[in-house]
Image 1: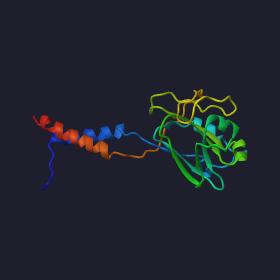
Image 2 (image 1 turned 60 degrees about the vertical axis):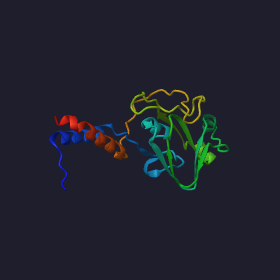
Image 3 (image 1 turned 60 degrees about the horizontal axis):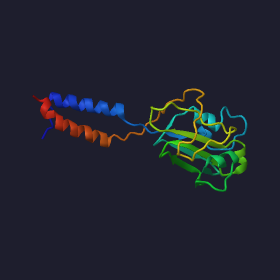
Image 4 (image 1 turned 120 degrees about the horizontal axis):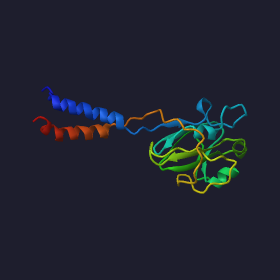
Length: 195
């Protein structure tokens, strides 16, 4: 049995498809440290981890990927971030291959599990935006400035924008549910389009 669509059904299906393509919420995985991974800075890097974070836009649902050897990644509070205190982490990762997904907005503070590495600049502040593309981005607070209030993901203080960050460029598509909703809508609407 062949499936045949009327002209109006075909147009409706085509419009639903393009509506999905335009409205898909994109999540991105950022790789910390690029090809070199999460490592202690040696002094010849072109930018710090916080400069890198300031030029990227992070949203709820995005994740960051840490690749490292003989080290660890700690998620800490702002005070422990400033002091490179590794004794009371919120989360500790030691597998050498860590992906951390942002499930809420606010500031997240990451440091190396090696205090000397942290003091040498192996630390990172990420600001996660509350709503994709709605709020103006801000740079991560400077590590040398006084402690900003807040906990990771709790909305902390406000940073000052230095330059507009680049938008997310990677996409993980999850269109199945959206496609089914459009298809169901087409089936409901199509009888009225045929007249």
